[in-house]
Structures are given as C-alpha cells and as structure tokens.
Image (cartoon, rainbow over all chains, first blue to last red; front, side, top):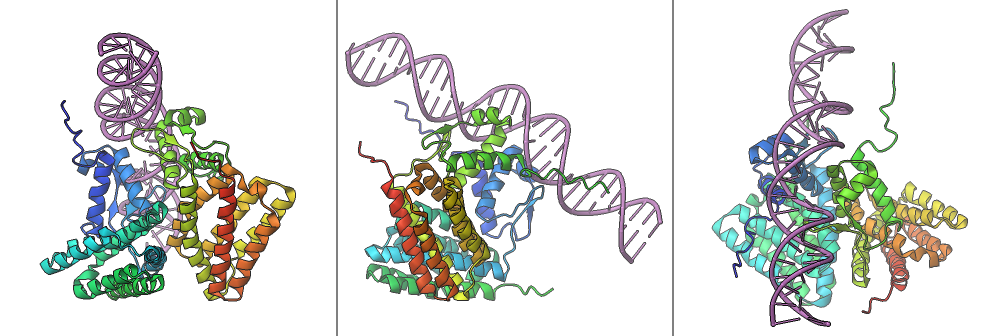
Length: 223
Length: 223
DNA sequence: TAGGATGGAATTGTTAGACAAGAATGCACG
DNA sequence: CGTGCATTCTTGTCTAACAATTCCATCCTA
C-alpha cells in the first residue's frame, strides 16, 4: 500500500513555516518593537529565496504584526496608547457580538472550556508564554464557536496585535491569574445560561480590565 | 526646477494597477462567479510577470474576492444563501458599532452625506454601477468616520464581498432607489440627533432589508 | 460497457540572478 | 553649523527555470 504520509509534519508550505517562525518570535517579544526586518536578511538567515521572505513579510503585515510602506523596510509596530485603545475598541466590537450570539444558543464552545483549564495549568506552572497563548486560544475559541467564517477572519486581523502587545509589554506578569480565570468564568456562565446581555456585559468588563492592565505597563511617551 | 511629477497618474505600483483592474472587473460582474483565474493567463493578458499577477491574486484573495487553495487555480467565489447570511451578520456587527460610536459624538461624516447625494444622482441617471459604487462609498464612509483604523480594516475585509454580491446578482436593479435613500437618511438623522440606539436600529433594519433583497435574487440551489 | 488505474498536461510553489527606482545615510562644501 | 549631493541600501519588478502537485483524459481490465 505504501501509505507513506506525505511528510505533512511541519507546515506544508515553506512560506507557512517561515511565517509561523517569525510570527512566534514577534508575539513572544523575541523581536522587540521597532525592530526592522529586511527581506534579504531574513532570506539569508532562514536559507530561503527573497520572494519567499517577501511573501512571509506580506502576510505578517496583513495581520498587523508588521508595518510596511513602499520601498521601506518592514518594522515591528510600536503600539502607543491611542493604538491600544483602538485595538481594544475593535476587539470588544467583535467579541461582544460573538458571545451574544453564543448566549442566544446557550452553547459554550468546547475549545473555550478547554483553554480555560489550560490557563490554570500555565498559571500554576508559572509559564507565562503558555498563559498568554492559552488566553488567546480562549478568546479565539469564543469567536470560532459562533461558526461565522467572516467574524473569525476579522478577529484574526486584530488578535495578532493583541498577542503582540501582551507578549511585548509582558503585562501578564503583573496579573493575578485567578482574576482572569474568574472573569472568563463569568462570561462562560452567562453564555451557558442563555443571557446575551449578561454575556456581553461580562465580556466587556473583562476586556476593559485587560486594556487597563496593558495601558498601565506602557512606557511614558513624553519626549 | 523640473518638477516633472513622477508620473503618479495611475497607481504608483504595477501590482496596485493590476489589482485594481481585476477588482473592478470582479465586483462589476464582468468576471462571473465560478470563473477561474490562472496566474499565467493574467500575466500574459496584462503583459506583466507571473509573480506580479500572483501578488495581485493574493491581495484579492485577502479581500474575499477570490478563493485559493494550494496548487489550485484561483476562482471567483459563488456566494450561496448561507454565505450571504454570514456576510451580513458580520457586516451588521461592524456597521452597527460604527453608527453607535458616531451617534455618541453626534457628528455625521461629510463623506457619507456626499455619497448620499451621489446615490440620488446615479439613481436619476439610471447608471446602476455608479449607484452600487455610491452605496458602498456611503457605508464605507460611515465606518471611516469613527476614525478607528482597525474597524475600517475589518470592514474592508467584508465590504468587497458585499460589492461582489451586489454586482454579480444585480440585486440593485430591482430596488426602488428612494427606499434606499430613505433608509440611509434615517440612519444619518439618528446619528445627528445623538441617539446611538436609534442609529443602530435604523442601520440594522436597512441592512436586513438589503440582505433580503439580495437573497430574493439568488438562483435556486436545489440540485 | 463500466470502472479504476496510469500516464501526460496544466498550474502553482520555489529558487536564482539581475536591473531599476525610491529612500536613507553620510560626506563634502558653503 | 547647516545644506545639498552622491553613495548605498532596500525594495519593486522581470526573466528563466525546475520541482511538486493537481487535474484530466486515455487506456486497460473486469
């Protein structure tokens, strides 16, 4: 038969692999804000052709993890207070719609419940990167649970920047994990009880808290 | 002096020009649903290199105007009833948030008011393409008026498909322009009077009407 | 004749090298 | 010390080619 499983181990495409690698390095703060990423440098570092590096950079730009203008080097964006406020305004818009829709059916997405547990594990083990990762997974699962492909795509568009800001500013290090867990639990409970208004309220409260925590870690921007 | 104006007449980039040209042909229904667009054919037709055509296709894919999977030809998507419902659910989420925010300040975006006038002109002249164009401009201006870059980017992600479906199904041909104008006017009035709830209500009503009009023109999908 | 397997053709993914054009930097000159 | 120019870096685009995958049609077999 020779079912030798097409080696789908890593990402199927070379561009995907490069994209994923750089993405992780950015959101984990390994590549700091303001860092410049040139196409040729990436290409030589990863031993790929320049067009491949270019494609990866373009995809990262699409997710807001890089800024690019014509003929200029791509740079990891520095999110100031105004941008973080804009980010959370957009985020609340999407996620509020999501939990309202979920509450209308009363079904809690299984992935969200699983992520909630993962957060507790990561918090107990003090592995902060995993904690952030699980938090992102939780919110992504909420949106995905609605089953709207377009809502999920819009969420993807901003969740990358959320991940970036959390990883870069390391805001999570100052957070009591049990507080986050409680806020998440309140949202899930409201969904399960089929109360859209309550779900939206708890989610908004949670995200406003998260925004405040993030803003409090912001470096002063006075010249 | 020799200020010989860098020939910025057309789009600055070759990819931009190609992208814009194909985009217009798709949303105006010139390229019908289900049509396949190969990289080499576009490249030869437009006299550009294949990588350039590839880049344009990728950007169109990002806006939902094309569907692409690995190693397969890009195709203009066929939006069935479920997808149109999903599209409008997402659209209402974004635009409702936009008009609510606008009403909170009471400021009607100037571009929206201008587009409203343009719709009336196009309707009187019976130039349907312009009517659709102005309608898209109106809704885009509403979102842009909020001043949130991310909200606008999320809106871009779906408004292309809206334009596509309107252009492809030619739903606008069955619509009484004065009805649309009245629905738009109600939204603007609510914004001007600073009533977020009313603005959200009128906008939701308008979009649900638009969705119904579009669905009524859908070909039957029974096998 | 119907079904499936095998081959070739078409298409995309990736690479290499090259040239042009715009942007940024530093140096020389006033 | 400030300004203008030239060099250099980086990206935009093209040509050419090969690899890998998918699709389609044909042929063979039952």
